[in-house]
Length: 488
Ligand code: GAP
Image (cartoon, rainbow, N blue to C red; front, side, top):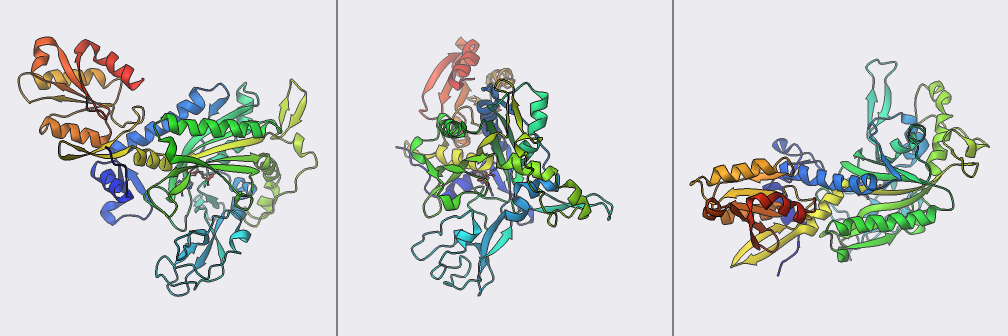
């Protein structure tokens, strides 16, 4: 009977030991909340992103991709509401000065305050029994205050024309900013979506649990544009599609659930939002957000129509984005530059947007947690990662049983033949049992061993990771055998 992951620490140490994930700047003592993906981790995360792209772009007729720059015109963030509103409500402990997000404070019973997107709601929380996570003093906090989450930097070398710009806190706005570019350069018609994956940055007040909440992370986002009135139906469609994606890639359905947002939790742009949550092995409640699926209405495109009209004011304000007021909405807003003309029905409107927004790192963590298993095999402990084959960093490892009798040469020939089609690993060091264990821990679905019998009948042993069953396969059939089993 396999044991699943009990403590996140066990996974963290496996990730470090086997080269999945390292603390950033480790040799300098580390940089908090930043992580580097090692040789196995980079393959795993890339496979997660590729699986997402395949499912939401490659396999659909109504989706296209995009890859925007991280630095964008600062007015984009004014129009989106991030410059003025993208902040967490924090308190400072009067005793030790540690700042904590109001919704991350816990009481004696261990219950966290509810997350409130709207600061005015969070500000009403009673904090008298909440404990400072740093010094454990109870109820001694300053008044809640907003803490801005966007990272700022400056662009340009000349003192008089350099300006403040922001590292994007979400990839979504690059999609809205390119809505008309995509419309004008493709023949796509509404309903359609644009997908993008890439880095986002947030100066999070409290980071959490390994790669779960970090200050630099990758998002995989879709903005799906549809006719107003069809938005509820597309929201349901994407809820179902995105939940199915996690399950198809091997996450146990019992570890996933939908959590609808309460009205006072909704982001300023959302009409409705549901989170797909995963049962992570940390925190009080365990259930934590993996992905949000929001109905953003026509909010962003309308706001960007206002943003575009604010350019003159922005120059007048010496490009100070914070001081630039957003232009009023034009009375003919639904005919503005970001509107859509439906030539079949001869009508013009601003589309509504459904946004499934996932984290590539958070997803990778969920796939790692869910795949983790410990088993006892003939009195010995075996650690394994039961990844879905399409996510496994290495698909097949090739071994000679011993380093003689032509076995290494034959094993190398098989390895060289396979590596053009899939990620392979060659290993001839130590006893074969130990080599199997190392591959189990890396999540490699198949191991091929060249042994004494190979020279006689040109067959090899193919061992499957989870069942440890071994098949005898003719060398001419290895590719077909693996392609079928790996569903490639
Ligand atoms: N465009 C909408 C948006 O950004 P969000 O709920 O703030 O919505 C979407 O983020 C997803 O991005 C989250 O569900 C999570 O997977 C990931 N994410 C957000 N902040 C993160 C952080 N600090 N570290 C890691 N992943 C994060």
